[in-house]
Image 1 (cartoon, rainbow, N blue to C red):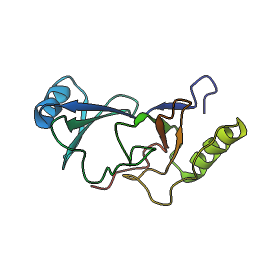
Image 2: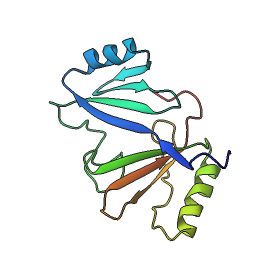
Image 3: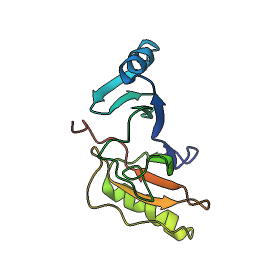
Image 4: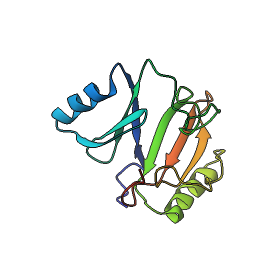
Length: 143
């Protein structure tokens, strides 16, 4: 890893839109990579692996996003930041997590399950905003 690069990068940017399909087509026309339209969500990929997650502003949160305190798998409105590390493996995520613990941060354990192919863990910032840290893409994501 290049020591001049940040240790983490923005993984996902969440946008609530009026019409997922229209917004998906608009961003595709801008030259962003269409990743897919799924029930309740569309995903557009930016250069560098950052994704725009399009959710319908008039819909309730998808049932897969149950309310909780931390992380993307919980309450979208409570999560303020979703980071993705350069590493693709659980071992690399464990190493990144260990550096945070060494710096005195309180972080959750790495989750036993995966989220669309990503290993991840959660933490909160000083204002109690939920943050999820994911591994980078290790291949095709399950649909």
